[in-house]
Image 1 (cartoon, rainbow, N blue to C red):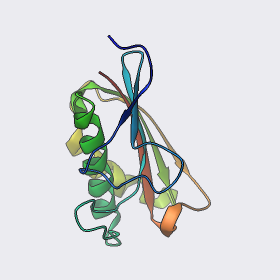
Image 2 (image 1 turned 90 degrees about the vertical axis):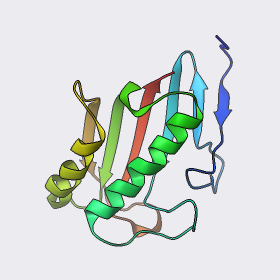
Image 3 (image 1 turned 180 degrees about the vertical axis):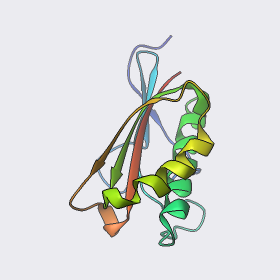
Length: 128
């Protein structure tokens, strides 16, 4: 196993628009940068319901995780950043569809502001 950090690059998630990587493989794990609801094929920002935004965030995470040679069922930790904690139930209803038991460890927090003023951002850590 390569022990040096390795950048993950994929067309199945939005391109990095700053000094960060879509993902990094290191020490047997994949660290996926926070994903906001941007369709990577069109560059379109998904501004619909929080369900639609959550679905796009998780689809982007899936793209990064799979490009790293891992899979959604190997995700061990997610952090969900919400613009409004009142959206938790709607986020959770969609999020639940993406994971089987045991579900990853998770934190969900309300934040003051997210990139492009979206309603949600999700980051993940997976085993390789």
